[in-house]
Structures are given as C-alpha cells and as structure tokens.
Length: 557
Ligand code: C2E
Ligand code: MG
Ligand code: MG
Image (cartoon, rainbow, N blue to C red):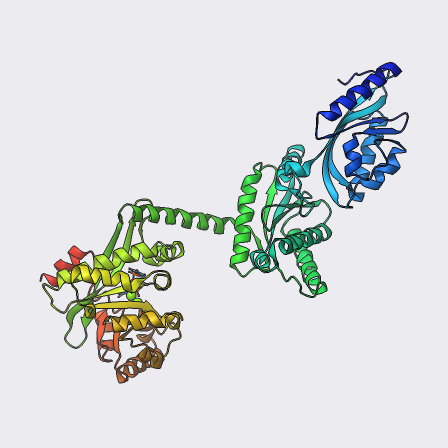
C-alpha cells in the first residue's frame, strides 16, 4: 500500500469513479485530497451536514480552517505539512468539525497517502466517520466519552514509560433534583453548562470527558499530582459559583470531585482507576458534597472489608442465622441482690473473621438493613428463652436492644407481638432498650405503642445523648440505664460521682428506675450500691454468656 504510484489521467478518472461507487456503500464520508491541485473531493452527504461550498472544492486550507475546531486546527495543519514534506504517510486523528448548526461534532479521520512517480505525496484518500454515533462522543455535551478516554489512556501510558497524571471524577451533586424539577431538557442544559465550565477551567494537557449520568472525568496527562488536581477543582468550583450567580440561580447546582493519581508502571488498567475514583467521589458525597476527595488506599481497604463482612453476615442470615448467637448477662436487683432478668446481647462467630464485637458488626447490620431480619430472630430467640427460664424464676425479665434503624424501617411492634402470641409471654416481662441518640422524638408513636402494649421501655446509654428526664417521663419510659463510662469516671472523680448521684436521685423522684451498667469490682459495687440504683449489671455479677452457661451459673444453682 505504501508504494502506490500516482495514476495517470485516465486512471485518475477511474479512481474518482471508484470513489463515487464506494460513497454509495457507506455512512462514512469518503474524501480525496489532491495536493498538487489543492483540491478536495468529498461525499455529497458531507456537504449536507457541514458548511462546505460543494463536494469538490479548491483552496482547501481556507475552507477546512473554517470548519475545524480552532483548538484542533494546528494539529491537522502540522500533519498535512509533514505529509507534503514526505515525513509521514499516516493520517489518523480524532478532532472536531463544525456542523451547519454551528455545533462541533467529533470525527475520526483516517487517510492513506498515495505517492506519485517520484515518491512524493500526491493524494490523501480516506474516510471520515462521526464518532458520536459510535458513542465515542456525547451528543448532549459535545464531549468525548469514556470509550474514547479508554483509548486515550491506553495510548498515553503505552507511549510513555514514566507517564503520570490523574483522573478526576466530577459529579453534579443534585442532578436528580434538577431532573425532577426542570425535566430532562433542564438536566441536559446543566450538563452542557458543566461541560463548558470544565473545558474552560482545566489546565494544559487535561481533557474533559463525559462519563455516565451526571459524571464527567478530567484526564490529566501532564504528570499532575494532588496539588494540581485541587487547583483545577477550585477553578471549576469557582466557575460553577459564578455561573449559577450569572444565570440568577435559575439552576442551582454544586459539583464534587474524586481524584486518583496514576503512573504507567502501576496502572495499566483504567477500569481500576474508574472504580477507585468512584469510591473517592462516593466519600466526597458522603462528607456533605461540594468538595473534593482524594483516593485513600486505607479507607478503600476498610470499605471493601466492610462490604465483605456484610456479605458474610448476609450469607449467615440466609443460612438460618448460622453463626449468630444470643448471649445473656445477668441483671441484679440492688436491694435484694437477686437475679431479676438478663440483657440479651448479640454475638457473631464469623467463620472468616472470628468473634467480632457487636460494636463492629451491629453498625454493618444497620447500614445494610440486615438488622431487620436479625432483629426478628433476636425477638423470637430471646422471648422464647425468657418464657423457658420463667419456669425457674417466675418474674424473669429479658432486655432486648432495638436499634433506631429497626424502629424506622420495620414494624417492630407487630413482630414482637407475633412472638408474644407464639410463646404466651406477658409483655410486661419484656424490656425494650433504645439508645438515647437524639432520635427518640421521631419515634413517639411507636413508643406510645410499646406503652399501650404493656411493654417496658429502657433508655440505654443514658447521659450520652440529649434527652432530659422530663421528656422521658412524658414518653412513659420505665428505666434509664447509666453507661459504664460514667461509672468509670465517677469512681475516680468526685465531680462525676456527684453527677451520677444526682442522675439517680432525679430519676427516682419522677418514678424512673435506674440500672447502673458496668460494675466490675467489689470496690465499685460498694461505692455505687449506696446510691440506690434499682438494678446493677456488670462483670462483677456476670459477663454475657451463652444460654446454657447462663442457666448453669445463674438459674440452676
Ligand atoms: P449495650 O446495650 O449498652 O450493652 C452493654 C454492653 O456493655 C455489652 O457489650 C456488655 O458486654 C458490656 N458490659 C456489661 N458489663 C460490663 C462491665 O462490667 N465492664 C465492661 N467493660 N463492659 C460491660 P457488648 O455485648 O459488646 O455490646 C455492645 C453494644 O452492642 C451494646 O451496648 C448494644 O448497643 C449493641 N448490641 C449488642 N447486642 C445487640 C442486639 O442484640 N441488638 C442491637 N440492636 N444492638 C446490640
Ligand atoms: Mg443495652
Ligand atoms: Mg448500655
């Protein structure tokens, strides 16, 4: 192919004839550029689409200069010069042509040089295709898409052994809201605004691409690091602020960014970079949006570990709550020092992670919603157990912890009532423990339901949140549980001791019972029993243990 000879006049007309036939067989635009005559021959269909004078025109440079995007023109001019000078026979570019509406569309132009008898470039013949239709360019914003970015990235790192730079994922924080409020066309408008902002805010050797939905990616192929990324992001954020102000807040939006650095030695897989930039932008959104987050490996590893734990939890739930167990810790009446009940505490003996403390896996159950099925299993197991132990201690009570997520997302009252019906346990022996974390007021109706259903209600970790005694009385709470952290501090510090004393006195004065948690030693017991808490719970009287051990240690004897 490389040593083609310039055809004589007769053959040239055959060449044009072949061209006219080929033109009918493709959606691409076919072209021949004749260097000697400064003449350009292109498919009729191109004349309909682009502002070209006709399908065969002279003065090529001036005509093309008018339709090639100004940023791309020098690259094409340089290549044509090299072809004429015999320095290259290659013409393979992606660049932008202006269509008749004045919008730029991405084209892929590939041509082959045809040499004359003297070995000089006579023609450039080839085809032009619109890459928008191949999804390599986005018709809404006019930006290239990630399909093209994949190619650009590969070509950049394969050409340069020491290549470095970053990918910055950009996301419109409130895009869903914009779509709901202004419809698809309003959303598209904002995408176009953001695309223009990106084009104008980036540094040299950076290129913006449209990713999916409201996501864009900026590809820095300039060795840029975190500082450059932050600077580019600040430019973009400032331009967004200015733009929303200029359009009188007709559309109000903010953008976040997630950045991952790359180097050609470590990252030949762009999918991995997408995945990690996705994580960085997820953190940016989680931390309140309108900000930038740099990919952090430790955070990512922890996140993946949490997902794996979640998966293991899910499998155990599916396998009939395999590896879950309820432990029970004794609750002692202070006045008589007799056992009156137990707190049911969840344990998970994971095959992969071993015994994991509930402070680690309960939040994962909550995040994933698995706390709902696990919670039902807990009601069922604990209530059945309580009923069984009542054969030995008739007024035995069971305390069950219920998380805020359970209250919000499931019909807890209905679930517990089912277990009560099945077992025949009187609800007054069930103590529902809810933590005091500022969510109490949101569950007023439910709490009223517990009261009307004759359940007992305890506020766990009392003193670590915001509720006041008066409010608890209004909610018909029966018991407050004072957390071990108070006991620990109060045994060392007279001021904290006074606070615990007042908390207990005040609770009693409005007929609330008090359970003091975390009494570990005889010394602690002698200090705190004098304050007259109603109940005491702590390692001194027994650690949380399996149902069999609880029975052996506390009931059978
Ligand atoms: P919590 O409900 O306040 O449970 C009391 C925690 O204090 C238990 O920790 C218990 O083992 C510990 N504890 C009791 N006495 C002592 C003591 O004398 N010294 C010390 N250092 N600690 C003592 P555990 O079992 O690790 O549970 C931690 C938290 O996990 C619970 O705090 C509760 O918030 C949550 N949790 C446990 N089981 C469940 C459950 O079934 N459902 C829900 N939603 N949360 C649960
Ligand atoms: Mg508790
Ligand atoms: Mg507690």
